[in-house]
Image (cartoon, rainbow, N blue to C red; front, side):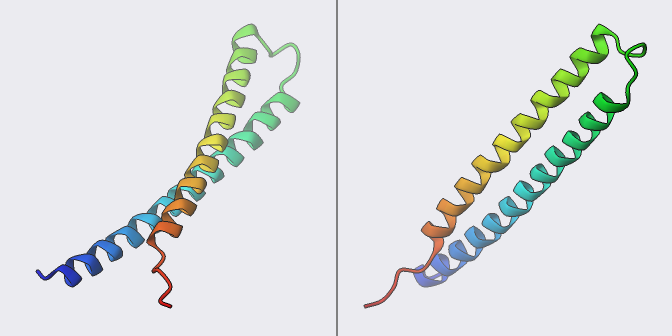
Length: 93
């Protein structure tokens, strides 16, 4: 395989990886949003009598997981943006 062919294939592979990473970031963001909704519903509708220390700990943990997912999605977005810039063809002048 000639060098231009290798470069073209590498660029194509990089573009596919970037697109897949963007899909993963969107999935992570959606999971964080879904978790936030579930946490809010549980926190709002669980009666005081039904709440135990374990339930409160689980709700707190769920909130922490949501924040971690959100932060991970944001970091992945930053990585994807950097990869997009690196993969963009250089302007010819």
